[in-house]
Image (cartoon, rainbow, N blue to C red; front, side, top):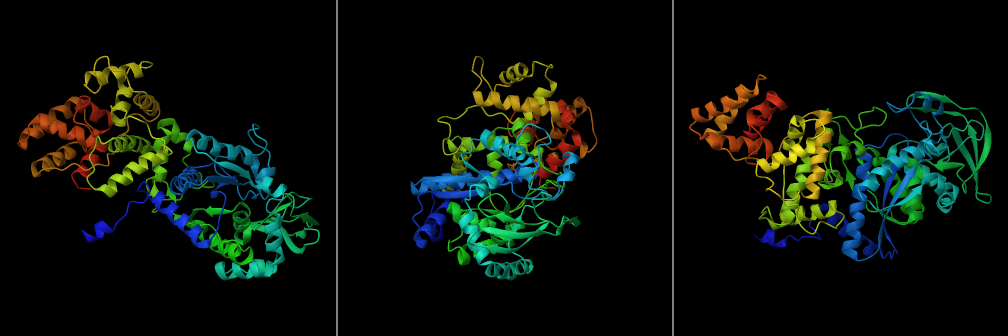
Length: 544
């Protein structure tokens, strides 16, 4: 009990609040009086944005909200586009003609789809479209515009003037001696237009110009020949960029006065070296960091633009509300997660459950857990949650099934009439707007995927007889069977184990749909797949 009394609910009780509190306390210890508390996220501009790309935005935005909420000060999220980076490979699914642009800055590559100013502009807008759809508020900063306007010029000048110190830091952190031999700056070759093929060898601080030679470089295991051109680049224009590991993060942190940026473990060494460069070379204490794990596909591979195993936020938003996507991002920060499109229904249902906790319709006795769940609900609504509950909560799985069996073109009307028949909507009761929205998402899901079974997260307590009956039904369903055969088997199995059929049906509905009643169960199980249902039943019984 003493340990329990010592615990404190910070802000709204979530990991976001804890991070924000630590940032605020750190800024106070540093004695910094920043006018605006800024969180930064990066927009990679070399391939189609996926859920991992979006997670950076969603989490930084939540921290921005928490900083404002806890401090009462103005906060801002900076979305910095890395569009000066060179194209290293053609991501799977991208037009093959991009191959001729390998090594060129993505901001200077024409848009293959001819609808934006450049390839980078097209990709950036894809992510910003998803950010806008989810209601994120941010200030966009284009990398090439920042270089062109000279925003980073003071920091670049310091880094190049103290290049030997920067090279030692990179060597100590990463083991690479590359920047002990060359300046940490990639000029864009005036002759061939490539960026990584140049080697910067001299800097004149009086003119702010870098001398370079286009010598060639190894990119993704392939040698890219340089054209041999020698020239100069101005650090006050977008003639080139800092090396990522050797100061680019540090330069923008110092220039934009960033106090928070999260990072994935795949770039940890770059973050450590930039932290030191920011502190030791630029004299600005680097931002507070949190390291997050990556999103993986269901096979356990990292989501990658080059591999092509990506799930875009746009695809998620076709089947689930923005708040369900934000819930996926904010539910937890650490730990790698396997995710694919089949997770949309589960997170959409979980959003309903969070709402019921928030409005006290579901009791959570532990005050810390209750605060965390309520806070999470508030953050997925950007701290502006609905004023009243939706009131009618129907599992996505049931809606998808009803859409599947409904007359084509009349799915919405059929689903609503079925919900009234099941007593989930009373006669004459208006359909809540958010339920209607969920119905429409489920109709799209059903058309594209069929009524795939949604695994429910909540555990159902089973008696010994109930567990035996559930496992016997699971064994029976290990072979695909007709709906009437399944319906009859449920009755027989219930009686064999001394259970009332009505109680057993209620138990099965709860396991499969999260509610005590629903469509006729035998045909439903046959439609979604007996083997899939068998797997869910074994999981509920703790047998898998």
